[in-house]
Length: 146
Image (cartoon, rainbow, N blue to C red; front, side, top):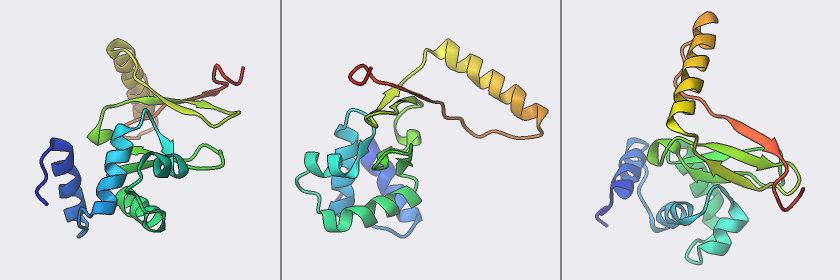
């Protein structure tokens, strides 16, 4: 099948770099994550993607993660959450509910993101460390759990 969108081409290229094909199962995972409103658990992904077979979903998620297509978020909840890799979408951070496990994406204003980048670079430089990227996760209680 010929990739038609920029995302499909990028995913196909990353998989090819790892000698993996863009199979129907992997395509269903990517489409499910693309359609999701933020990071989702595997049960949520299966519920929203009827074409996705549970029998291969775990293995395909792992292979997609290894290829840099999917990012797995583990925040101590019952299930890990999955999202498309930030390099395929946009830079963002997360709000994580410590009660129900809800994970929401948040995008900071550009000025604040630049301020954080500068502060992190200064800190890293003082420690002789070279940064490649950062993530910020905020933990607390969502509006439903307060």
